[in-house]
Amino acid sequence: MTAEFDDLYREVILDHYKNPHNYGLLEEIGFEGRGCAISQAATSMLTDLVKGKTAAEVASLPKEEILDEVGIPLTPVRMKCAILGLGVVKVALNRSKGTPLPEEWQGLDFE
Image: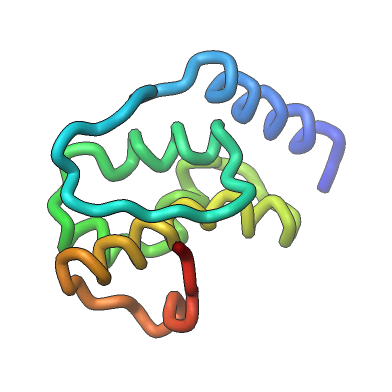
């Protein structure tokens, strides 16, 4: 990754960290999912992406959409952080609403 992309990544992440979107508890969501090491910025971006979508739409959301939201190439470690929140949401929806869990997310075991 070039220094230019690294600087842009930091700007995007810092903006979401300093100005989190959709902060706070959701009332009557009907499910809970927990994962470890989810960055606040990545979660802020995920909430923007899924806001207003149905459970079925979120369950079928490809990981590429969250990666497109980030907008820059990521290292494997940063990619894992960026998509971890989406995995937690997909597993929670599967457990609570019975939405299909795509094969790539099978085997995830969050509390």
